[in-house]
Length: 231
Image (tube, rainbow, N blue to C red; front, top):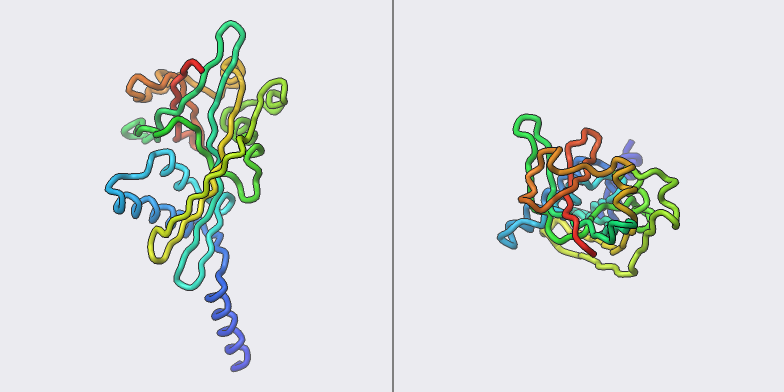
C-alpha cells in the first residue's frame, strides 16, 4: 500500500512538473473566456468580434491545452482568408465580412461589427491551411466536393504566417499561429450551393453594409454577413 501510494505521488509530481494535455471542453472554454475578459480589461476595449468568436469556438479538436504546475498554456492554429468571385457577365468581386450575428429565440438576431475584412476560422490540430479552407467551403458554404476542383474553385495559402504569443495572466499563456490564404470561386456557384443567403431575408442588422450572409452551426444560430465589393 505504501509503495503504491508513493508511486502515485511521484507520478502526480512528475505530471505537475512536465505538464499534461487537457481535453476537457469546459477548461478550454474557460481559458478562452479568460483571454477575452483579460484583454478587454488590459486594453480598455474588447477584442475584435472575429477574434472573440474564434476563441469561443475552440474545442479539443482544434485547440491544445497543456497544464504545467499552476500554469495553463492554450494554443491553436487559424486561417484567415479573403474570398474572391469571378463570374462571366458579372465581373470580379470580393466578399468582405462586415458583421457577426447570433440568434436569440426571444430577441432575434444580436449583431456586432466584424472588424477587418477577412474570414477567420480555426484549423483542426495538425490540419494544413489549404485543407482547412477546403473543409470550410464544403461544410459551411455547402459547396459540394465536385465544385472544389482546380477548374471550379482555387484555394491558395499565401505563405504568410503570423504568430501571436501573449502572457495573458500569470497563470495563462496564449499561442496562436495564423495563416493567410485566398479563395477564388464564383457568386453563381455559392448561390447554387445554397451556402449564402440574403441578409435582408434573415432580418440581419448590417447597418446597410452586408448584402449576403452565411448561416452556420448545428442549431443555425450563428451568421457572418458580407459586403460585396468590386475587386
